Amino acid sequence: MTMLRFSEEDDEYVPQSRPSKSPSKSESMVEYSGDEWTVPEKSASLERKGELAALLRHLFEETREKLGLEHESTITALLNLAALLQETRKLDEAEQLYKNALEHSLSQEDKLRIRSSLASMLKDLGRNDEAEQQLILAVECPEVSPEVQQCFEACVHDLIFLLQEQGRIDEAAEIQNRFEAEY
Image 1: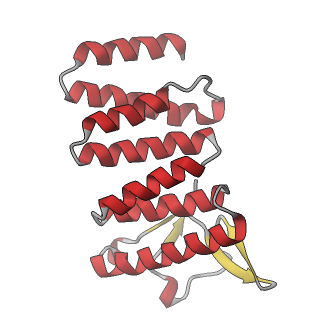
Image 2: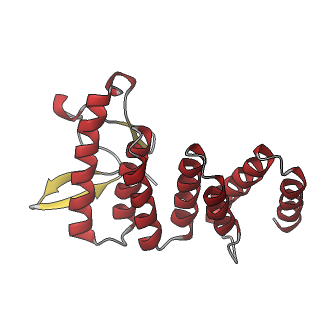
């Protein structure tokens, strides 16, 4: 998934996976690198993150209006906003956005990534049971396509690590053995 930039072409917003031009000074709070947008170190202040959150909210609203809530670009915009809110410790709102994205996401890869992000946040909040449940749901996929294998394996690893942190070594080993045998 990549963050998206929108440019006006023929009075419509068109998603782009990379910038069509160099950003102006007002756009410099995000940078494009490789295949994703990032917040530059110099922009990491809370005030700048607040500005970025406003920009991401606007991007999400525009994307939802133009493409619909279930479109992959809309889900990406929603996840980017949720991740920023999580980083700025606006955890209740971030949790709701992750759950909203999970409810409307259509792709298996998106669902795995959302569950992983939501589990990470829940774990940080000390809500390990809920984090574990999200990871269990992620790793109990009936079929794992080659396109999502890496994301799936990351969820399995996260679940094993969570169980190990809780001192549930035997359960972690059992899961590891099961998934090594199956995949």
